[in-house]
Length: 340
Length: 131
Image (spheres, helix red, strand yellow):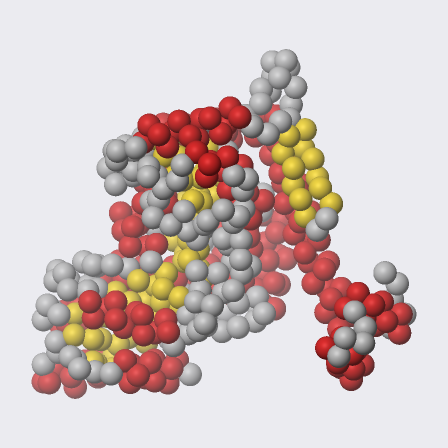
């Protein structure tokens, strides 16, 4: 491994190199970034499947069953990125998703990596997307990304994944929950897990009425102020009908409904490719990533250019309510020959 | 932000089902700011080594109450070595007779903690072991 670079070793299937690289990427180290640059041309092949939903709906068990199914029927290489929350107080975390994935242990073509959010909101960690890129380049056919037990607004996963599953379980909410904006809107497939429990009909009914009430005719991506609209394909064109999220019942502890769920995922993938949505989502995702990197680069360059003393002085003026933060930005930019 | 977090795998090999100790240690390490990967009950050394590789942990904590520590520990150390993870430190919690302590340490186990051990000692030793 000494003679090879990390990225070459990863491409050749070296699992130790892969796991070390994932750590470098997670810690945002320069070595990790250098490898990401080398690996990037190899990305864009894997099908990224997001799995989100409230805590306790059975996301990890469902991921376990899905991965087992893919291993048995399609012999695909599966990577799983499981995100759990970090403590906001100590920064520590207990990552427990592997407990539900013991069936996958011992299979060299399944790679499970747990990660903590490390202060990031939105259901994913900052480097989740980059970790997915590493798996993609390393030749994993499917990358399943399990978010933290998400509440109502953890929708970052929809920007990252090609196919987003939103997992619900009976008894967790009524039909008002179902028509609220947020997490249900991002679903490509709705899963009612624990479908052997009472109340499954009500949960399904609430989801169905939500879909009938307001299926979005177009997808709107919103990032820093500008909205990006993706018009739905015309209903009358026979080639690419609009995708209506199906509702699938599963009992993941018993493996029930998994085959049907996998069929829906396959249908969604086919839909993405036929309708051109794959390219549209890819573009939207990479645009968001590019914008974020530009922002980061500009901010760090600007902060380097502004003398610390000057920055502190302006900050002090804000604290004393002598100027507003908006004016402060203008002052700092003007004095450093930047234009807004 | 570049930040190095200590990652610890807390694993429960063997067939006994008492995981309270493992959970207490997992939580204490979490509260010390570490990222703890918890794998649950009845893990084989193979499963533990595999998880340690995939998670790129710095430390593995084994909870063994079954008396099988002299069989499970060397096997795990061997598997870690085979995977190239020679830098990974291993500590053990559980019921370990005194006469085995020395041999476990010789194998490379960095700490052995019996009933009544303080979590502060474990945290301090883990921090020391990885620096």
